[in-house]
Length: 275
Ligand SMILES: NC(=O)c1ccc[n+]([C@@H]2O[C@H](COP(=O)([O-])OP(=O)(O)OC[C@H]3O[C@@H](n4cnc5c(N)ncnc54)[C@H](OP(=O)(O)O)[C@@H]3O)[C@@H](O)[C@H]2O)c1
Image (cartoon, rainbow, N blue to C red; front, side, top):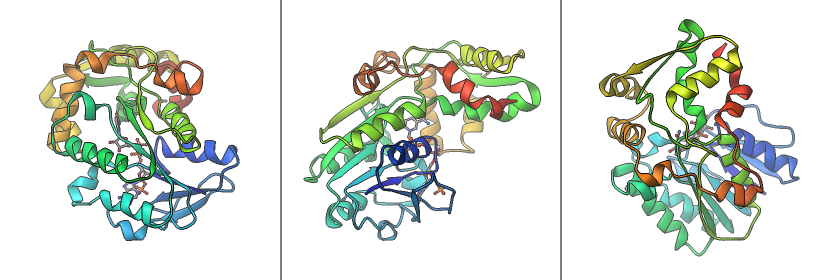
């Protein structure tokens, strides 16, 4: 049996589906009750309280920690200890490319520490380090629906954003493999926010205006969703990416045997959110 945390999110939904379709017994974990694919069992647990997570009978665990966990003082290392104590043999941790490219700031230091704890746990392990997600474009959905406008900072700075469905497919493969290692996950090409707005317009078949926000305007909006420190870190990446953050990684293609999906592909599958 494979336990998937973050099971109702951008990665977790396609991941539980892919594992179930591959014939695995899957337990989908989130705090709120939710519909899950046929044959999948749902478990309510809060990762800020490791004792609430029942891993008995699980051979593998997909561990996805939402960004606000550290804000509530959670100790995710206990989740790894709990996995080992309950007989789990393999953990696949969703980390972040920023752990390597910007190894400072509280959340990244903690995430790096968790990677190290997993590596030294005696469990089989894989660490997935994705860059920015295509699904972050859903932040623009309401403004596109109501004003046909994308408002974003750094309109002409390109990054190789990744489709969460590709992260899910790589995670499914990693959970069913016995190879330890770090995989860095990006999309197939770099794309700017202005080009993302054009892709959304093409999918809608209607013009979408691009309005460039200042960094301060963008930060004010992002602080509704994340701590100020994380908003600043994210804005640093969006505005001044390092060479490592604009590089396209070969890892998705090496694992899946095909190129990563494009932003246009993600947009075509999510166009209703923008209509
Ligand atoms: N967005 C990016 O560009 C980016 C880049 C690199 C890494 N990441 C990482 O990707 C992860 C987010 O992945 P995602 O987009 O798939 O997530 P998401 O769509 O935001 O979904 C989060 C999932 O986690 C569950 N969850 C949240 N808090 C929980 C808790 N305390 N206990 C148990 N379950 C909890 C949610 O369900 P409930 O609310 O019902 O609990 C939901 O199933 C984060 O770790 C983030 O740091 C994101």
